[in-house]
Every structure is written in structure tokens, then in C-alpha cells.
Length: 269
Image (tube, rainbow, N blue to C red):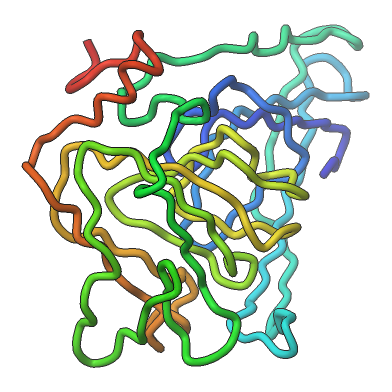
């Protein structure tokens, strides 16, 4: 928001630690579910103060606490709006002077983050993950799942290392889904201005839709991969599960290199 003569703009660069396919992306608001991150470039200008003087801008936040739901709708138990930060800006140029915008750019990616939207995914690697709205709280995978209580439940599935998975997600409008080990790329989503096809995340909580399709590259690492709701009350009440990534540790997902010949394996060259 503007205060004392400053105007600021946000340019989104990355989310959850992964650059956008093409950055930057102008945004009016930064939307963060619990555990989400965003990298943003900020540019401010003084609109009316004298040259050499300072102006300011105020950034506000709104925090919603919505740990429960009733009749298919989220119930808000706390809604807080306050000041997050202020910018002090010194005007250095004449009125009307502007700074050149950031030119759109793309980065060279590791192959496990290659764009998967054009990949051909075998039927055996297509699954459905659901976070049910009704109790008991648990994670379902292809219709199966159970509450994570005092003892760890069995793995939801064995997933082969070195391959790409496609999951249809449901229920994450009420439960921010967080996945360990591997980030996922959104390939299909509607009605949301923050989560867009092509974006990579490890946490997702859309506001305008309750389903999406994502793809993830099971690159190198075997063993346990945990998925859970990122609302602490839900996780502690059993909405958590794990997958067993099986095969030879270190197996590279070769599909990424075929989709993007410029991607790299290992450290940045």
C-alpha cells in the first residue's frame, strides 16, 4: 500500500525455492500458505516529494487461522491484519523518471526441475492423492490410506526411483499439502491467480479450486518421502503419510534431459 508519497510494485521471481519458468511475474499480493516461500523483487518510487527527500510505503499482511471446517467450508477462527514492514525511499531523480523494468528471463535448470508438462506419463505412474474434508483426518492415495496414529502406518505406495509421477490432487483447498524430498510442478489448475501451470512448489493451498494435477521427478533419492497437511492441528491428528521410493539409490530421472537438453545433472556447471 502507498503511504507518504511512495508507490511500490512487486515482481515475483520464484516460489518455494524454484524460479518461475519465465520470471519476473508482476503480482499485487504475495500469497503464502504455512510453509510456503516466495522471492520477490521490489521497486519503489516517490510520487511527489522533492528531489533528495524521502518518502515511504507500508506493506500490510492478513493472516487467517482456519484449522477446522464445517459443512464443506473452512471456518475462520482468527483473522488478523497489521503492518508487516515499511519502506523508506529516497527520491534521486526528477518527477516522472522511471527505472527500466526487469527483462523477462529463464534460468538453466537441474534436470530434476525440467519442465514436465509435455512428458508422456505411463498409466502405471498416474495416481490420485486426496486430503478428505471429513474425519478421520488422513491422506488417501488411489482410494487407500489410514490415520497416522501412535504407530507409523504402512507406506501408501512403492514409487520407482528415476521415473516421473503424475498425481491428481483433491482436498487441498482445505488442507495445505506439503511434500518432502521432491518438488512438484503444476500441470493443470483453474481459478487461481497465484498457483499457475508450470510453477513448482512443495506446498500448495489454492483459494479458488479444490483440485489440480501435478508431476514430480523421482530423481536419485530412495527411501521415505512424507506427505502431510501443513496445518499443525491436522498433521498431529493423523493427516500424514509416507511413500517408499524404491530402486537403486542415485538413479537419475533421464526424462528431464530428453525434455530439456540444456538442463544439468549434479552441481551447476
